[in-house]
Image (cartoon, rainbow, N blue to C red; front, side, top):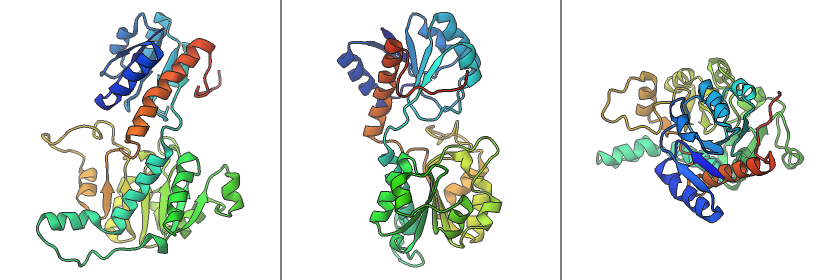
Length: 332
């Protein structure tokens, strides 16, 4: 068995190499992304592992079929950048890593919130300028707030535990109720109720699809004054322009953004020596009421190792048995 792993970052290499040695399976490591051009490197291999934010072009899967490769294993959760019809046409199976570290993302959501509540961004900037005055950066306490958790999957449930540990009141919404949370009486009936009753709204749900946002001008108008939005899920859940206007006007207190609807080509890139052309994101960066990070909530040693190894294990299972517990099922 021979596997090829595309889009591999430096921090992932050692885990892939260790897995290869432990399992006595050859894994070719490729730093380039999987494209119609680079897929040519996969000729002679049994399966392809990959991770990238850019879309996977349909031609990739035509070539995979030509090479007799019928499994693509992703090192991440999201599959919205994979053309499913191209997979079906070429009889290619797809796997992902559904849970590499829920705790990493849940912890990060609270980290960002605490930084915002205590005005850390502005305070650090003041201290850097040798201004050591306290005012006007007086903080707020999490234990006094109601936190609305949108989405109670693995990450949402991990976040709930942390928020409750701080003494916050927690309410939640999900179309599919977790029995323990339902028994505890945490669920509200709909998202509108969650937005209206929460001092903090933290998002842990998948994308709603292109053009469908959860946080926008209309939904913001229904939220509490001085509320906070935390997004470590998907950038397209929020209309960032509407969110910025709400914070700038004083309707909302601020926001934590680890994702952004136009992040592809920006996040995880060094643009320090280039003209920055995203004017909206520039305003977000400059505002002390926004905590912005470049999609790093997941980025821990535990999560990176799990992404690297679980994807490879899923590939082996697919090749040896024809299926795996992480295979994405879609209608034929």
